Length: 90
Image 1 (tube, one colour):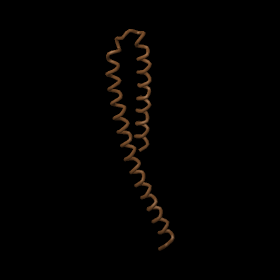
Image 2 (cartoon, one colour):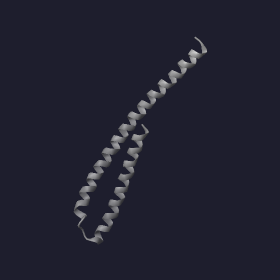
Image 3 (cartoon, rainbow, N blue to C red):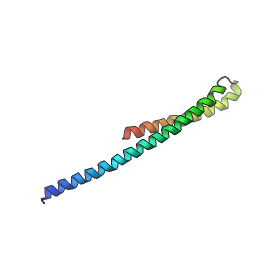
Image 4 (tube, rainbow, N blue to C red):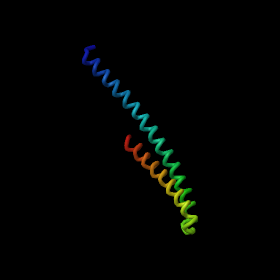
C-alpha cells in the first residue's frame, strides 16, 4: 500500500470517528435540551399558577412575591438561553 493511500485511509478513518462522536454528542445535547425545556416549561406553568392569584394583590405583600417571580423568571430565561445555545451548537 502506498504512503498516499495509507494517509488517505487514516484521514477517512479519523473523519469517520469524529463524525460518529459528533453524532452522539448532538443526540445527547438534544436530549439534554429536551429535558431542560420540559423542566422549564413545567416551572413556567407553576409560575403562572402562582402569578394569577397575586396579580391583583395589595402592593405591600406583592413586592416580595414580585421579587420571587422575577428571580424565577430570570432562571427560566437563562435556561431558555442555554437550550438555544445547545441547539445552535449542533
